[in-house]
Amino acid sequence: MPLLAGPLPAPLRTIHIMGICGTAMGSLAAMLVDAGYTVTGSDAGVYPPMSEVLAGLGIKVMEGFEASNLDHRPDLVVVGNVVRAVYDEAQALLSSDLVYCSFPQLLGAMFLEDTRSLVMAGTHGKTTTTAIATWLLEAAGRAPGYLVGGVAANLDRTARACGAAPGTPRHFVIEGDEYDTAFFDKQPKFVHYRPRTALLTSVEFDHADIYRDLDHVKSAFERFVGLIPEDDGCLVAYWADENVRAVCAEARCEVRRYGPDCAWDGRVLEVDPTRGVMKFEVLRQGRRFGVFESCMVGEHNLWNQVGVVAALEREGLSAADLAAGFPGFRGIRRRQELRGVVGGIAVLDDFAHHPTAVRVTLDALAMRFAGRRLWGVFEPRSNTSRRALFQQDYAVAFDAADVVVIADPGRKDNLPSADLFSPAQLVADLLARGVEALYLPEPDEIAAVVAANAMPGDVVAVMSNGSFGGLHTKLLDALGQRFGQEAT
Image (cartoon, rainbow, N blue to C red):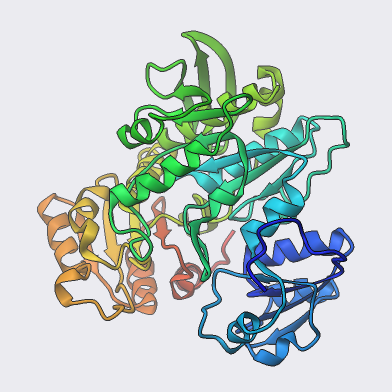
């Protein structure tokens, strides 16, 4: 049957999810079970912990994308982004009369209809701002729904339906991903999220497998801005970013500008390296709005949090509400996450892979761990970083690091050699800038070399948008053998 474009099918009792083992899809499955639906799913590589989570929910998961997975004829099929049209199950779906839709479509139709949707968008900072905004609303007693593209320490899952009672403010905070929706819907996911208040942190070229160039990226965000309603909508935009200013030019709604010398401004007051927290001030129209303390440290996190403050003030939270909530936020996995300390050497994990993210992450760590030697260990794994598009940008992204280790990019995607990122060239460029750098292709080699050469007091930041071959554990184990102690 044609793609779901109107009301949900009725009666709706059974829902099948293709690609159910992804973090977001698994959380959607939990929301559907909570709502009383019978859920089944399929995926390739069904393994813990998600297999255990789904089993605990009573969900039957089928291994592989076989046509027979649809023999039970569910009332609705939700197709995940990982599913390709050539899969047998996808072909069986397309040739059947079953109703199907994407994850973002179902989220919009089932969970956003009677809520005020707060969408956090931008090339950088989406996960951080979504998690912080969710926690601040939760701490203020608003019981928001949410969808976070990462694991926040304060939240027991990555997605939840709104728990606020009808007649009270009902918020749903969503990470507004600009990546495409499904094999049958190449629109960005965020076009399905019905923004009322939106935060736009940044606009840069990324996702080279989806977007042709920066103008293509900007056109997606321009469309997003156009979705915000004129009457009661609000766009909170980081005005220091010229691309943000450009895509906001045709906004019909209220625009709240934040950034240096804007209506919503901010500054770092102090950083406590012992506790790993930052105290910062937010100014509104040049006057102090509030002083807040957060575990999210760094200049980029200052602006992320100023943007969240401006957005949530629009939604009715006072400076006192926000000041009470901020200290309780405990961070996000893979965002300056401390994985362990051995022999006085701290090993951190961060999702940074775009050159801007690498730069601001290292700048933040240099602020957080002032005076300590900083290692930047980088895996150029993403679809964009494996290409030569940002070869020169990476050369200046590591300036805050004292020692840099570059890993092999891995798969080459059948690209011409001239189009591939060169680790050797980056090492040469870093050395020319006076930064100690070396190319170590494999995680095992990196763990051995870093463990042998790091000194007590050093900070090792491991940056990748993947698992990096388990480097974090391997490095902590190697340090444990060297110092004869367990990680703390």
